[in-house]
Image (cartoon, rainbow, N blue to C red; front, side, top):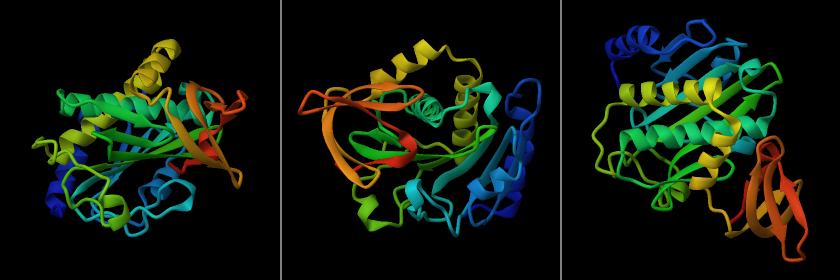
Length: 255
């Protein structure tokens, strides 16, 4: 766990180092312990703002799942972003955030292959390195990122066996560098990226052509992953040949 002096240094550094959004400086808040960075980030709507915690006592993932992490072993951050900079759909933001986190990891570990498992996992060697949570309204999006830095980052034994970390990839990086790289890539993707190029970047890292099972609206759907509609969700072909679209906000991957 970081000391209070270290965290104060983080805040001072990030307030001057991070790029502005639409000419507005980003508000930065660093906490040694908090319930959830997502909840705090919402108070800065419409943003832009960055909230980081050394430890969360009530962290959460998608669809109400808990996010259990060891203090000081992860990057736990949430970004409050005004929706008028990035469009208005949950699925477009989800795709953008996934590409941004993948690009950041590729900067930190240039020789690894990063994959995106729709809708919210960032993988290396088929193991989960980071997860993304998108919340918010039409005026503001709250983008939560949890990225494993040390092997003991994950406390959930069911998740840990299929996870990895930057240190396991033989990357000795401090969390301040990781935070700065993640935010800078998010800012770049959300502010400037060409939509067509962004979709190509997602496709290059996605499991297209694989058959997967999903749960959506209480029903299970199995089919081949065909593509991603940036505004409506994942496009899947069922065995019958029917094409369906699964929205990221209400769909989870079963296997």
